[in-house]
Amino acid sequence: MTEQTELTSRQRQFQYQIWLMLIIVFGVIAAGFLMVPKTEEERLAMMARMGTTNQGELVSPSVDMSALFEAVPKSDTPKWKVLVVGGRGCDQGCEDVLINSRQIHMLLGKSSGRLERVYLPNVDDMQLIDTQELQAVHPYLLIHPIESAALAATIRGSSADWDMLDTRYFVVTPDYQAVLYYTQQHDGGGLLEDLKHLLKYSPNR
Image (tube, rainbow, N blue to C red; front, side, top):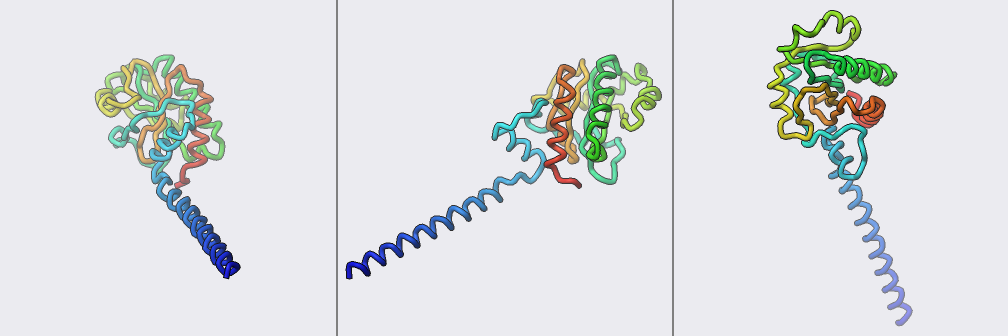
């Protein structure tokens, strides 16, 4: 009788262990499904919470820039964008930013086709910009003037808000969400590393 009782106790203990293992396994699977980010913005937010660092500054909250791209021709396949904005005309700082973005685009190699560069100058400064020369130097650059007030309203209240006196880069998702920004003081290599990381782990659509 004692042996049977010990056997029954061991069986119950074994059953508890099996149930505990099943609960842990299914709990991890369920948590994984719940935590998987559905968009690039959610993924970036999760990375920030987990302590993953970007070379650029995180746009918080992410900013919807779709209204600024209404006049920009749409590509057949949605692409990531390096957006260049701000400054008075295209001064030396602006030219440096555009040249850096061109070099970074080239250095992406086989992933370069998933990215496009867009320059949105202030419409009031167009008389200061030689667009033909700019297009000759940057043949794959999309140039479309915008109202600076529209840009100011778009970024207002986010961490990317600034006086727009200097030129900046923004990284914009295929869904037109600005997620990272860079000033002229940022190292261009940091933008390249961030783009490589984003393109590597984002869906190739």
